[in-house]
Image (cartoon, rainbow, N blue to C red; front, top):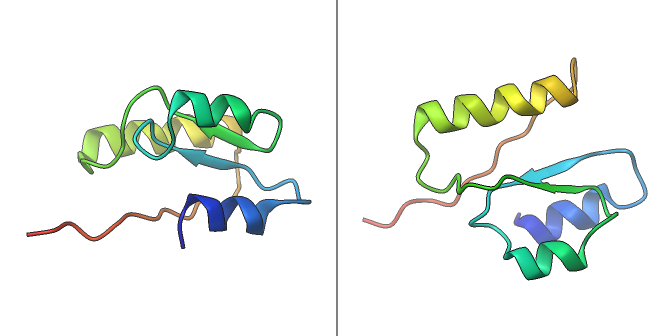
Length: 77
């Protein structure tokens, strides 16, 4: 599943989709305004545990008691 799939699954519901800056460009994000997508100003792809912890904390502040699904691409190498 990718961002487009997540957006399709969330369409028509109150489900929020959050992504890192490396998942969608600022221009594409601007075109998706009002569609339930929130974009962090920083990338999440490096999978730095402290960065991910901070991102999850931020999501938790906005969506308390909600289930959070995390998706990441497999690292090459």
